[in-house]
Length: 221
Length: 221
DNA sequence: AATTGCAATATGCAAGTTGCAAATTATTGA
DNA sequence: TCAATAATTTGCAACTTGCATATTGCAATT
Image 1 (tube, helix red, strand yellow):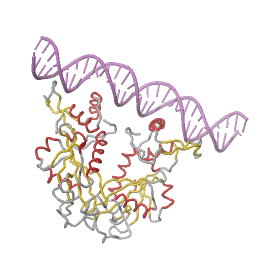
Image 2 (image 1 turned 180 degrees about the vertical axis):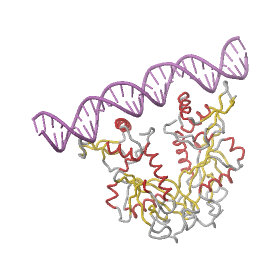
Image 3 (image 1 turned 45 degrees about the vertical axis):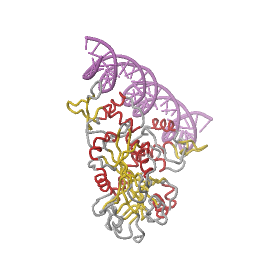
Image 4 (image 1 turned 135 degrees about the horizontal axis):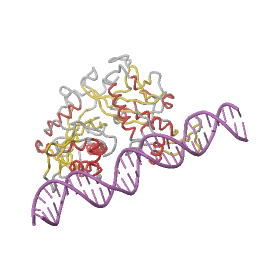
């Protein structure tokens, strides 16, 4: 056995996604210390073995402390590891991704947290560019087969909003009537009694998710 | 910062799958020391920061050292962590899953490695039962949308064999002609020149994967 | 050498899905 | 009241899929 072996560094990083101005964005923070001082990095931190029950708890704590957020969608992405990714030594980072509606984020957002479009990610600390790319890929894949994209919307939303957020996440144009048909068949959402959005010509009916949990489907939306 | 914070234990576990006697099985080893001495556990080990370039490299090394296997399908599952999963302290285990054809495994298999049906998993060390359940779920999900199940077959195989391994992994009966049609459309496989299996009444044509890499599809097979 | 049995493979069609275009509806502002 | 606009519904052709039935190639038997 290798009890004596030097233990690797273990951290948790969170890719916090939101959609602002029609763009998928990630919350980044400039590092205020070495290594990579001054460069953008994901929010993250060390596992506190005395207070965190698991790395999921660490991720939730990071979201709370660095973005003022609680109770949003949070799921493990994967673990990134290696001798070279952190100049301080062999390290592993368990990455989590989180989705938050822009409205909820701006209410609490600390001033040092910036929202950068995923299409304009450059010069990041550590291997965070790779981590974000992996998270975006996961969001795209899983988004097509689940209710995931809906967690980027506020609690109530219209069908055109839902279609647009799916289209944005999946990176394709969606056929409107086919989308409505599928959402209907899946019984994903329910109308909000008496709710209408007056943002456009004809008011759109307001809906909400039937369940707060993530739902996965068989067919692509 | 928390440089002083005690670092968690970091290990890697590998769920090695194969299909033997028509059953999906996992390679398990009885532990020869505390904790959980005498109980079945996944193969795994500590990260060797001096020789492993990443946790993937650790997993490959574990496969080599504990099962005599190289060059088989290997992919990260997810990381399991917590204060209670290992009595020695707060720990994280990066789990990987691997697929191997039964033929390749039996050629090299050490005598202490047992193949247990995933339907008969009981009394495992640590949280390995949970880890295996998660891996089986992933195999099912990903198997329906990719060439994953084919990595449980030898390099050449017949269409009925391919259909059966998909059916087993997906846990459903597959319509034969529909399956052939889809495999054909996807151009997943190519015939082996002059190859025929004489195992049954009418010899079946032999095929191989067109690529050694995992392929993912849009539609369920 | 022809016949039978069996599993592999091919074919045809009804039923289910999906994509597209056009029609209808509810509102706002002229 | 009417035109403009976006939300919603409807209809249908094209594509997919599931199921049943037919055909094929070989082995064992007659």
